[in-house]
Image (cartoon, rainbow, N blue to C red; front, side):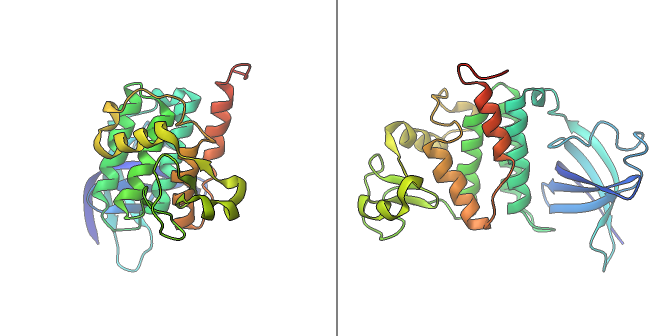
Length: 257
């Protein structure tokens, strides 16, 4: 049996039996860890206050050869983001971060860049950054870190040069006018504001991005381009986005609060 200790973000918990939890962590140096936290549901003494999504912890676990799940021995609080998640929009953005993080990481494969990306985005959210802008930033860098970022100057279908502000954005990249027609209504013009956001995401820390302008909201061209590219690669639909869309709807004039 081997014992490990590392800083980690809690991505997900699942009930196991009457008292235990399966805990999924994104650790800084060991990648994704899945393990059993014994009696976590029946006693708060060992794990109380650290089982909320995206809590940053100091985790200690043991792995035994031949066993799929580790044994979680301790989760010590480093930083809680629970207070900021009292806001429904921020909570929905965090749910997306956790779901995408689960899909793009693998057991025992180190992803230090992804871990740091999640950390800086969460810190910016805690400082009051716009949740929609932070999510678009997170999507941009998840694609870039995994070598999946679409080209913004050539057509994703035929390879022809595309004016970044005049290209038609769709899931998976920009299209020229000729290639955008078969895609139909699932394309939107990228436009100058969206291009500037992408350029800012490429060179700025999240807290240094220009103020949100509305193009970052659900249903817009940036979500179509970035979220669509994530979902094409993983061949899945990320269901947590629907909560973000619902939260955005309450912020519209005349929406419920």
